[in-house]
Image 1 (cartoon, rainbow, N blue to C red):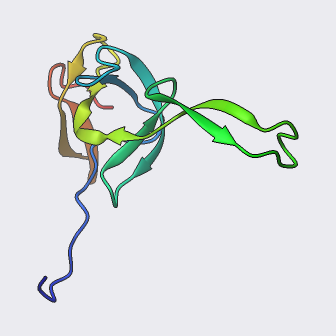
Image 2 (tube, helix red, strand yellow):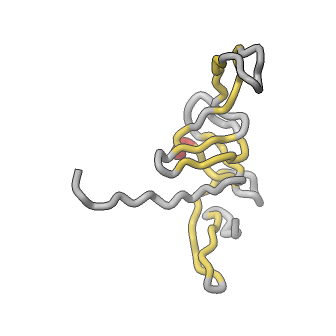
Length: 111
């Protein structure tokens, strides 16, 4: 690899947005974004990509056992849901009153 710095891509989805999964096992499901991982281009969504994790007994879970939790998925497998129409949309940006705002490409509404 060269000595140039690698820049992280600017993510168009933010924490708290509602997104729909467009490919994979959970295709068609919607959920709220819980966490973003820009270094790895992954995203954690409420109720999506549920895995079974085996845990040893500890202070929080004295019995141990199997717990169900969300796992991250690639950000390219989700699309933002337009709040006005409820359909998936791409995200654009435009300058409004000196600030850059996100807009829904389908409706033109500010997100």
